[in-house]
Length: 301
Image 1 (cartoon, rainbow, N blue to C red):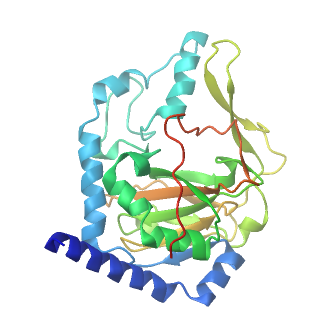
Image 2: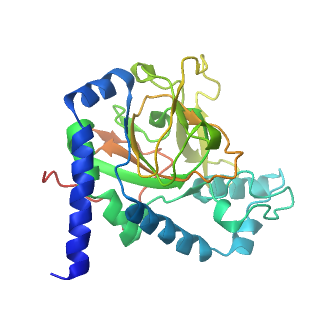
Image 3: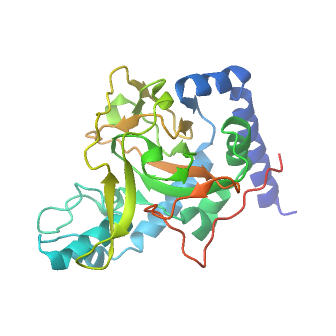
């Protein structure tokens, strides 16, 4: 075995040990009670830098001018199809472009979400997403039987519950959030409402066909929920670089806009149950291509 492979195995063993030290019966009970669990300093600096460097390489390959052309719209029906497809497929940070479509932030800071299927398309993200650390959380804490994984890289988010956006019958979504940078109240850390996972979402994002354009569109059902989420009692989930936060799909969470000069990036896995008794809804806004079905995650722990 090559020295590099031996070193990598050694690093992963240390990371796995660090997780197991924190994955105590008390932590599992706290997750069930509060709807979230924080594991500090799981991944080391080299592991995090590998992911961040790979992300920089991917962003550098993006043709900003080409992407920018579809990001500026008028309100007529002809461009509504562009709007819908842009929402489904785009990655722009919402404050990255001015009204004329000009980039007003550095390219590396211009993207809000990058990563749907990244865990199956890129070796660096694949290694991270299907690691023993991920599998340990999936099977021992989150109690999945046959987990199906979606992924993304992102930043600021409004108050929401993940089960509103990744739909199964019954609802089964849970999330693994990996901090690529340290996150505090100063640079837009996650916030969440302990115990909010005991209540289901008030509305759900569903995909449909736009009757005027014939293309895909999305809408919230119901459009205006009977109740609004309350963030009263929310607590900051401040984390180290390399920390992991596990989130129940009904856990209400959000992050404020990062107005500091300290970056705060994260890589997120959203997982649903894939066992036969669970239905992956046909009107999910995230649909896997026919030639790229979900990978089976083996419980070989």
